[in-house]
Length: 335
Image (cartoon, rainbow, N blue to C red; front, side):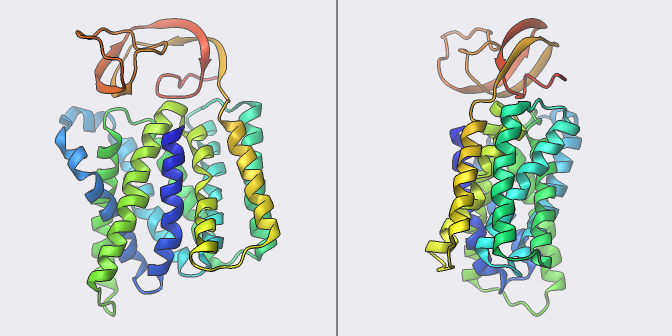
C-alpha cells in the first residue's frame, strides 16, 4: 500500500512538471526523454541480475503489451494532452486510468472487485466527473489524456502479472525500448526543434522520478494488492498533480475541486480494506518475486531463517485453504 501511495505522489508531481516542458519540446521527443530517464534511473538495479532467455519468453507477451501501451503510446498521448489543457485539468483527467484499469482487470483478467471496492471506484470516478464537468468541457487535449489512461490501464494489468522479471527490469525494458523509439521519431520529425542541455536534463529528471521510481514502486505494490486495488490507491496521483499546479504553477482553485478531492480521499480509504475470504485452490507454481514468510503461502525454508522481504525463485505446491485475500500474484482464480 505504501509503495502505491509513494508512486502516486511521484507520478502526480510529474504531470505539472512535464507540462512546463510540453510547449517547448515536441511530443514524441519529450515522451522519449521521460521514459529514457526512467530507464536510466532503474538501470543499475535492473542490470545487476540479468534474467535467462526462457524467463523473457514466458512473460514475453505481457512485457510487449507493457512496452507498447505503457512505454510508447501512453506517454505520447499524455504529452499531446499537456500541450492543450492546463496542468491542473490534465492532472485531474488522469483519474480516468482508475476505471479503465478496474474494468480491464475484471473483464480480461477476472480480478474480484466486490461491492466495497466498486463503491470506492465509483467515488473516485465521481470526483473526476465533478472536476471535469464543473471545470469546463472536454477538448481534444482532454481526449488525448483519456486515451493515455486507457493505454496505461492495459500496461497496469499486464505488469501486475509479470513475475518472471523484477519491477526494475520491467521499467527498464519499457523505458529503453519505447523511450528510444519515441525519441528517435521525435528527432526525425521535429526538425525545427533545437534541444538545449537544460531541456534534456529536466526531462530526464522528471522521467527518472515520476516514471522510473514511480513505476517500480507501483509494480511492487500491485503485485501485493492486485492491479485494480493498486490503481485505486494510485488514483490519488491526479490530485497531487492538481495541488502542485495550484500552489507551484499558480493556477486557480475552486470549491468544487476541493469537494472532489474529498470524494476521492473517501474512495481510496474504502479501497484499503477490500480483502475477501472463501475456500480456494492453488495450482503448483514456480516464480520469482519479493515476499515474506509470515503469510499463508511462503513456507519454504532458509538456513539461516530470513525474516525480512527478500527475492528469489521459489516453488509453491498445490494447496486448498481459506483465508482473506486480494487478487495478487497468488490469487488469480475466478469467481
